Image (cartoon, rainbow, N blue to C red):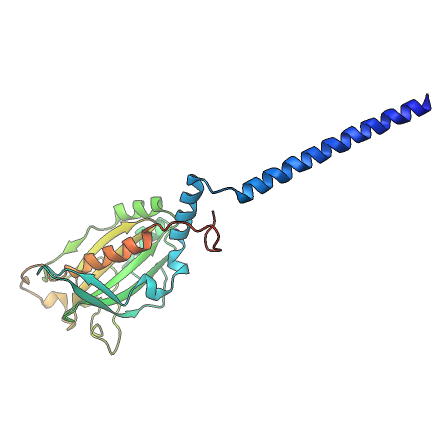
Length: 246
């Protein structure tokens, strides 16, 4: 009787052991399949969104703000705006006047990157500010509350606006807040892009009494648009590279 009972326990142990082996095998097979299968469309989309959201931090500043950006001044041919400098400070509260800083801060501003450009003739200076948010939804809510674009056509001041960023020794050296005459706002992905522009001679906007012909600050929205679209353009994910999280 004892021998029979012992054999029964051995059978039970073997069955249990086999069950464990089968379960372990299934687990390893599932893990291997998960690790080696192609990512789904949804996973690729999430990876692309994460990569875009990290560009402001992962990209070199010179890539966020290229040295030269093409624009069309209205005469039908392409000209190039040149970067005069990049602001090292990225604080949300220091980049713009209080009314704007309050709006972007309320919607979770993470940073504001700024750089200044001058047009090809070096007569107009444009400070561009990239406002970083956690996702496109927060960026869109802030965008809808921000003051609409205003182009004074070269007459009078504009406020509230992004702070001007002059750079000594360059064509934008005299572009300060008092010289601001235009502002624009754009959005792409988790980024809102603000611009403020004026004349490089530094004359106060309040001293400009006559409207300039045409659109003297047409370069500004084109620069903002170009920078916004480059930051938000989704790349094809490469899941083999460490910067991608598929």
